[in-house]
Length: 57
Image (cartoon, rainbow, N blue to C red; front, side, top):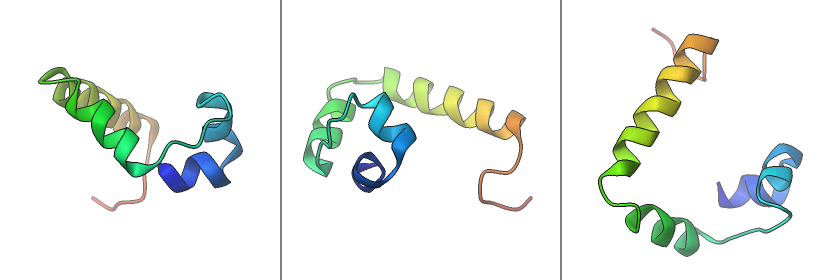
């Protein structure tokens, strides 16, 4: 995500032009507690419904 915030226009728009480093992402995720697993699971389910996300079945 750190690289994407620097190189990917979509990520740049979502981050408001910020390019946080890996330690900022880690602090954000660790500060979320147990909810991060639910959020990640929901994101993965939505991606799966949308089609291939770089993996094969």
